Picture 1 (tube, rainbow, N blue to C red):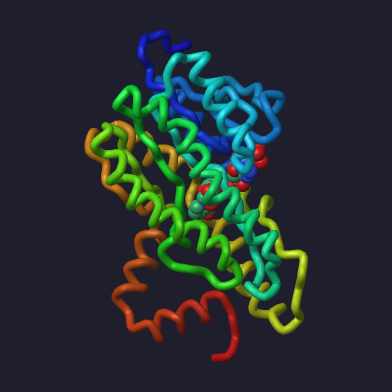
Picture 2: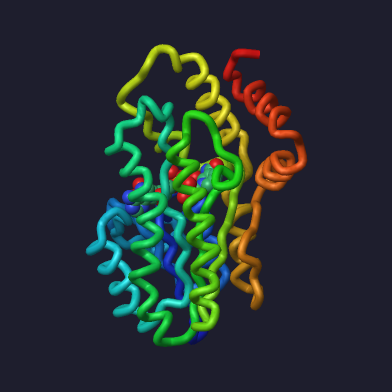
Length: 277
Ligand SMILES: NC(=O)c1ccc[n+]([C@@H]2O[C@H](COP(=O)([O-])OP(=O)(O)OC[C@H]3O[C@@H](n4cnc5c(N)ncnc54)[C@H](OP(=O)(O)O)[C@@H]3O)[C@@H](O)[C@H]2O)c1
C-alpha cells in the first residue's frame, strides 16, 4: 500500500538503474522515503516492478542535465531533503595506456559528477538550512589498486572533497557523509571500461589485477547490505563522516596502516598476480 504520510523525506539517488543505487532507491522507497532515482536512459528505463523507484534522466557529466534533474524533483515535491551521489564507473588499464581523454572522462563522472550534483542542490538546501549529502566513494579511495589508477584517484579525490565540504556545510545545517564500500556484487563489472590502448608488456599483470577485481566483485557483498547501511546512516541524527562497508573495506585499510609498506605491497602483488616475486 502506498505510504501517504505527509513530509516523507524526498531523496534523489544518482545512478539508480542497477547495482548499489537501485538497491538503495528500492529499500528507501519501501521504508517510506519519496525516492527519485536516475539513469542516462531517462524515464523509459523505469522498471515495471512494484516498488521500483521513479527514474529521471540524468547524465552527471552534463551541467544542464544536473540542474534539470534537481529542478524536476523540486518542481514535483517542493523540496529535496537528501542527495545520494552514487553514479560512477570503473576504468581499467595502466596509466601509460590511458589517454588524457579517458582519464578526464573518469573524473568527469566519478568526481566532477558529484560536484555538479552538489552544486545543483546546495542553493535549495542552504535556503532551508537542512539537508543530507551522501557520497559513494570506495575502498579504492583508501587503498589504491594497480591498473585502475584513475578510478582510485577519482575516489581519493572524493575523500578530500567530502572532508572539506563537511566543515563548510555543518554551520548551514547540511550533513555530509562518505560511504566507502569494498567489493559489492553489482553491474559495475559489466559496465567496466577498458583503455583503448594496450601495451603488451602490461598484459599479464593487467589481466591478473583486473581479473582479481572482477572476481572479487562477482563474489562480493549483496547491494542490499549497502542499502541497509544507508538507511541506518539516514536515521542517525549525528552521522560520522566515513563509513567503511563490507569486510574487505574494513580490513584492507587497517592492514595498509598496520603492516610495513613492503609487506603490504607484497601481499597486493601476490593477491593480484602481478608477478616479479
Ligand atoms: N560494486 C562495487 O564493488 C563498488 C565498490 C566501491 C564503490 N562502488 C561505487 O558504487 C557506485 C555504484 O556502482 P555500482 O557498483 O552499483 O555499479 P553499476 O551497477 O554499474 O551502477 C552504476 C550506476 O551509475 C550510473 N551512471 C554511470 N555513468 C553515469 C553518468 N555519466 N551519469 C549518470 N549516471 C551514470 C549508471 O546508470 P545508467 O548507465 O543507467 O545511466 C548506473 O545506474 C559507483 O560510484 C562505484 O564507484 C562500487
